[in-house]
Image 1 (tube, protein in one colour):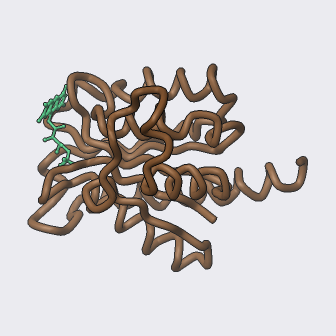
Image 2 (cartoon, rainbow, N blue to C red):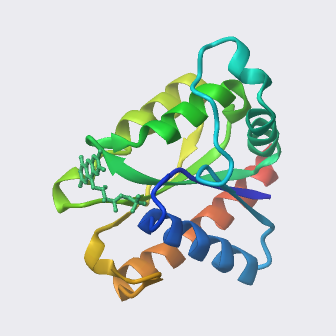
Length: 175
Ligand SMILES: Cc1cc2nc3c(=O)[nH]c(=O)nc-3n(C[C@H](O)[C@H](O)[C@H](O)COP(=O)(O)O)c2cc1C
């Protein structure tokens, strides 16, 4: 199963459009995909203690644990993923161990394209995640209303899904 974690809390989020599209594309290629949308399943702030007992936290941790791969769809906030994405990772910590992880970012400008690197490094170093080296980075002009209109980003999304499924089966063979 592939988990798609949609981290934006904005009602008209663009990264959520990418998350939904990734889900459809995965299902078209016969992959089971689960979308966990933080705007619909709010999580408490991680306090390192009582927050782990929250039912949404438990549900997310269980999805992360079961997943062969996780696609993180996030807004770029302050040259990073948003705090909701970081918080979700803090709350589910060790469930990420060894996961294949991909990134789909929506941003306001072209200069923040390395914004996933902080969280990518932490996932690699903390939990030995394998980061798919093909990030989606989409600006506002890639969308019209509720739709992705950029052919280039759509192609990149297809490439990400293809590489994810290839890596997933390669990892299954050697594990
Ligand atoms: C608090 C805040 C910080 C932001 N920081 C950045 C930034 O560092 N770089 C950037 O390119 N865009 C930045 N943006 C713009 C968002 O990335 C952009 O609006 C994006 O579409 C948000 O994703 P979403 O539509 O999925 O919510 C910021 C927006 C907000 C509200």
